[in-house]
Image (cartoon, rainbow, N blue to C red; front, side):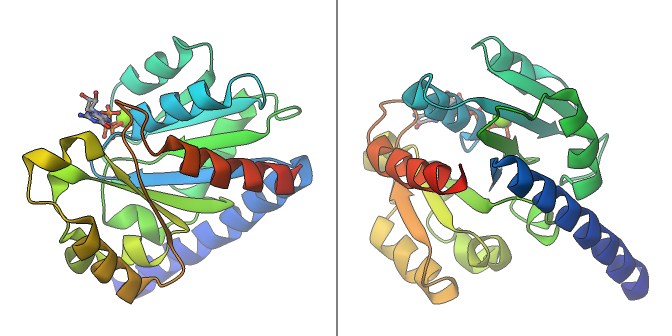
Length: 217
Ligand SMILES: Nc1nc2c(ncn2[C@@H]2O[C@H](COP(=O)(O)OP(=O)(O)OP(=O)(O)O)[C@@H](O)[C@H]2O)c(=O)[nH]1
Ligand SMILES: [Mg+2]
């Protein structure tokens, strides 16, 4: 793509993202842009987070996929309001998609909006959605070298979830090696190892989330 065209697309997205961010701030909604590879556990993470928060907060979920309603149906089956965006081929969500999707929710009373971005470690990081925080998931089977190969997504996140730690004994994955790679790019990131399957490590994540939710109210 022509460099000028790409710059125009990113600038237009930034303007809309700012509008989204203002709306979310005015309504007191904490918004997470969740980014990760396909199958790393994004939907499982959202469901486990909802289970752990219980009725304390009112949550809504925007699901982004190239095709299908599988993930939004999964979320709705747990009694959580959710809307599916199908990008039809685009490998990331954009701010205008979020702007349209939130019309489907009654924003009054929502405390937490989780946005599951399209499974991809590359382009989602170029497109702000108006989020309060970026959370990236890397799962153990993907390997600890990914920050070297996909630096931008690891550079621009507040939290890095290391999911599927129940599988760590089955692989050569090293949390220490991962930390060396990630802290070079992003010294302030919170790295939280956990398992959506066993629930281990979730206390740390929920503590971080609740602190931010309270700050947003
Ligand atoms: N062992 C193990 N499996 C997990 C864990 N978390 C998720 N899984 C499994 O990983 C697979 C993918 O999980 P999803 O939550 O669908 O992942 P996703 O990132 O939402 O996938 P896409 O939306 O398709 O990109 C499923 O079979 C989950 O049961 C975990 O902590 N440990
Ligand atoms: Mg999913």
